[in-house]
Image 1 (tube, rainbow, N blue to C red):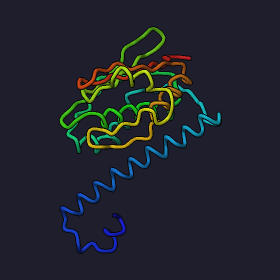
Image 2 (cartoon, helix red, strand yellow; image 1 turned 30 degrees about the horizontal axis):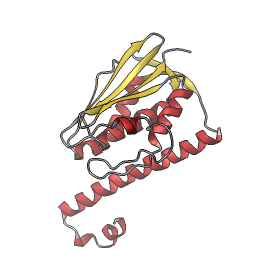
Image 3 (cartoon, helix red, strand yellow; image 1 turned 30 degrees about the vertical axis):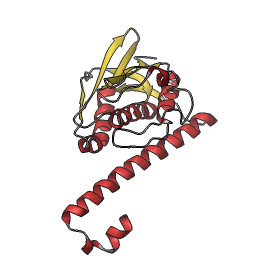
Image 4 (cartoon, helix red, strand yellow; image 1 turned 120 degrees about the vertical axis):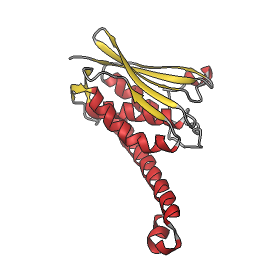
Length: 204
């Protein structure tokens, strides 16, 4: 697609070029997500992944990842909002936290139909903070929920616009949450939506 656009630009008017560039952007983001997950999964399984927890202001990370995911959400007219307070901090590895949020956010976009919504929120839980990513998407059946965090490829269903996934994202979320001393779970109803929860420590 890129080769055609580069070699024969005169064959495409402005509208066609915009469509092609949007498709290229989406493909690049999807490829980045896949490679990032494969690299992290490989490091996690071989025990060579670095773990450097620090005090983190979570809203900074959420803003960064929402900005990254916004073009994909805009295509489906999905509204992403966060009600996490700027005062919320956790003691966690920055790269792992970004991976958790990125995978849960892109999954929510993937399984939410056009004109849907996604909300990110948090609640204090003693020495932990519980984060939630809520959507009004396809939802997950009870049978599938039991195997969500088990093995790669078990849960890699197509999204509402036939988006594909590797099945590694949720496994990384589970591994990275547990490495940081937290837990992850999901509540979901078919055709109503899902809420993925995960906890992180607020201090060492």
